[in-house]
Length: 255
Image (tube, rainbow, N blue to C red; front, top):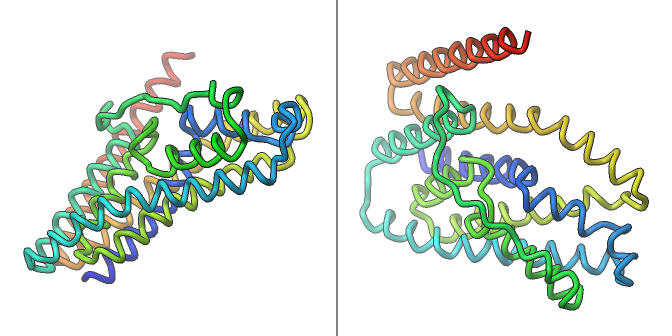
């Protein structure tokens, strides 16, 4: 059971990190830390990007320390495998509903962005590592996906502090690697073309995130009992029907 929760935590960490790139902070990063932008400031993109990735990993590890502390508490409680699976399944269903905006449902977030004045005030290693840490920490800046919350819950439910720490660092690493997406932006034209393509991929990545959340919920439910797994599948199908109906209604209104 613990192995399943661990695998789910890592899978969610990866997709949560990827989806978070579509946040305002992520989009700003992909516009401000590029070969084009760094050349204009007289800096080297590779160096700044490296500091950004290192900062993001450190930020994820910082979040991981918090998760590790909570995981140690869960481990000390000695909760049963069934209890852990039920909690993980419930959290995954809530996260999937929030990310899919089922019936307009969403979890609370805050909308803080990094301070872009750092770009003109500090050396590249400072704003590179500083922006990276803030973005990699997950909860410090704009929270784009409920999957971030789910990652925290699953990491804590492993009851293993070391694993929780690595999950956090993994999330930060994925967030940090996003800066490399802009490595070929060397002109205003390539910048505009990149962001057009990037915007088009947003819904695809969101669908992947929801699919991973649903898969995690279903697998954890099946570990509890076949009936619980069936109930989770029914809930998912109902939610899918609601989303499809809402989409048809929006298209009809536009027409």
